Image (cartoon, rainbow, N blue to C red; front, side, top):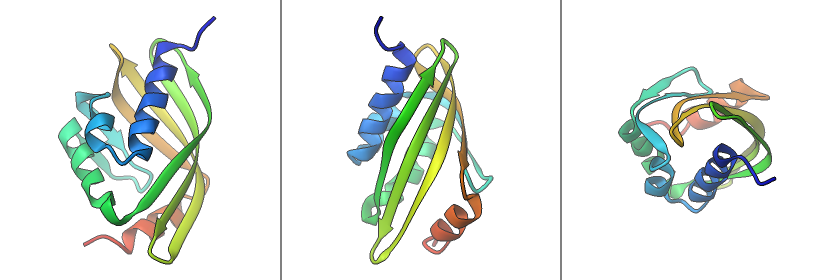
Length: 127
């Protein structure tokens, strides 16, 4: 038995993300995706999510997949994240919970093992 198509889609999205390919990543999102972030903010729409990734040019951001669980409607990806900006870095674990329809992410929630540390780390780079 092969991998569930939604698990394969998640792996494809993570490959695009890790390759610094926001357009490739965004192709796997529904036009009207609702993207809930660890800091409590929400982005609405594929363009907003892709646009938020444009600020990653100077950030070394990788997500190593620990495990993926998938059904016809949902994906849960367990991720070990590593982010480095200049001489500052953070490592954290996150659970990416996705609602999926027709092979595209329609809604995403992310939960970290230390949401305050993640929020504090990224807030120092907000313009």
